[in-house]
Image: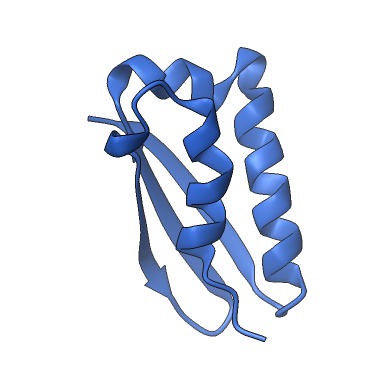
Length: 82
């Protein structure tokens, strides 16, 4: 079963931010074993997505990692602001 990682991560991040229209999720690269995803949010929302001591970002990465592991892949998520 193919997982759309863009949609998964976007659905996890959108409820957290003040400016949901500015959330952008893009798969930068995908090969047999590694998927790289870039998340762009409004600068005001960066702290909300990362969370205190990175706890929210780690939780998002854990959910994405569990989803990717079911397909025998690894995933990395880069969170940036514009």
